[in-house]
Length: 545
Image 1 (cartoon, rainbow, N blue to C red):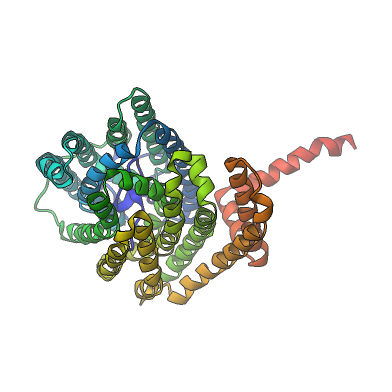
Image 2: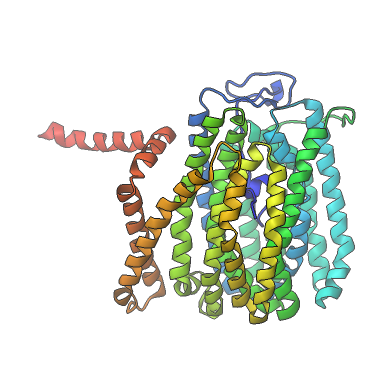
């Protein structure tokens, strides 16, 4: 299903956000050289330095997501050794429900505020009060539904887990529009810093509680903490106080866009969480905990990458929606960059699943390795399809994204049902087969009558895919030399060194992508710095000679 990155229309259990352009903002919110006006966001027009700001934003976002990845993997490694599969399974049972409610956490209004060409102070304030009301309603709903979860799963401990997790909706509702304001103003550093700080706080709290023997409550705390910390940060930095709601102002287009995105999110959530609900109901919390660890392990790297690039690409494309040629170029560059990073990661998960599980989760989780391997094609499919949401939603085609979701849902759920009788490996296999069958239909429909053609998209896929298959062949050819290594960590290191080394060599020099990525480094500002440093390093020896 086509979905956008976590900071844009969904959230992970930790954090995630997005970007913007030189907006017109109130004096209290102005910084740098931005214009000042009574409009909260201003017109959504592209500045002259859009390319530079977008590339610099990508650098900042990548650094932040790199830190997030290390924190997430680190916490996974530690918590897998401090907690049991049952602890993870208990929280997963509640998250399967609250995650569904999370789709409604801002009713798509943050995305609407970022994507809309112009939005006023009155509209902004009205959106704030709507978001706050939604947050209160969702928190209350968690309290009401908690007893039903206990009955459904026959597990009394779920009652207070659901109540506490519901507090996160309050924090999100109170800060959604403050976050959107920072996104539109391209405050990359601020957004990234808040995301990292909130994740550090939640990780420290969760690991501390787990070490103290608090069991599943450590995972509950890690779920609520990021939204609380982020909310405080958004309010403190945005320095914007909403006025009373103006119900007479024109809200139809904003609410229509947000409602369509939310409904699309509902369908997406049901489609890709049915597997967890089915496993929890028919196989129990322990099996669900194993599957959940496998899914998180294989999905975390690509999910972070999607969040990183969408953070920059979505608002940039929104500002280019009236410039088809530039929009096409920006999308294809972002899509190609994303695929060039996703493909070797998913291939590594498929080839090295056993060692990945041993290194990151420990030997007692070895039973999760087959699910990791079988889920790799699913995650690759997500990488191929999810970025199409950048194109559809930034150009106002939210309804088409919804229709594509309606096409995908029955196919994927049917695949999950076919695999249910075989447990986690059956579910993973059914999910991978069903999503793979949908790749070409979704690409052709998503790009129909847009500035980007299906042929453009398939060309961007072909180069990294060919490079990845060649690299995988080299790894398999070297397996007889790598397998005798006794240390799982050493085997994993050698396998991935070969895989990524061959892959990037083939992609850069054989497929000719070096000419694409070096200009990107120059736009970001990295390549000249590297070059200057090398030149500086040679000066002493030249003087000596």
